[in-house]
Length: 403
Image: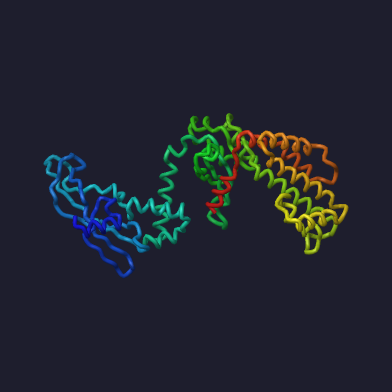
């Protein structure tokens, strides 16, 4: 190998593939073509194992990593051999290059890895990746799907999963084709709880139902199901029922985000009802309650003095606003329960609050009464958060990445 060839192989990283550059060219489509020879071709017959006699070379063109932003094509000069064994069924065979490129593939193996890294880590679109490697959108998308399916089929991805996160995701935003709009997302939260790494996306199942989750769990082996100790989810009863039926040893956790979100929804419904009762219309600019609609949902500790003054003015504007004020106080108390110095203090504060609003809520506080009944029925899952420390927050983050 000449010094010039060694430098070119190092810069273009062809040395990693076990080939050396013999020539190069640029075509009219701004693609770089590298003509390469194998450094150590194997001349062993795949059928009988005997060494073959060189017959000729054939050109194998495949896409490779982009070089300084330009698509690259490798032209591999692949030796062909004649098998010397007279009783062998194989007469002519090629040198094995499967370590460089898969059979009948259009790209090198390392290019597929680069495509996946660009789409997952660098958040590049399929269109941008296709332009970088000089392939069609359909080709890149097919490569990415095949790689993901291969990873999903690997048994190792399910090893060690003890904390499972479940949530729905709106996968399709347009009508047509009859496919479900929602998918059930399953995430391994074990690394988060153990503090060893980020959450891992395990799978996505078409549909958002008890059956979707139960069927997926049923398709796993008993060893996997026995390892699951905690399942985090939102308030959807279908997921809770599926978990109870398929994972009798697992503990269900309703994470803080969805608990607080449920309380926020009831507070908003209370404000809207009182707004309609007192003003006879939906919220308009200048209405006291409409003006504080966002401030009501903000934690007290994050409010400015100006926001606090506006909040008191809106709640005190009319006597009928007392229902909103009481519901708002419970909403803030719920948030404070999660902010106690220790998990034990938080669990005690949360239990006392749930017990306080489960029954006996005064008339006129229908939204708060409904919230109390809902939270009390899920008290085991809500309080389990303080024992396990598992939350669906990382699942929501992965949902954002999927979007």
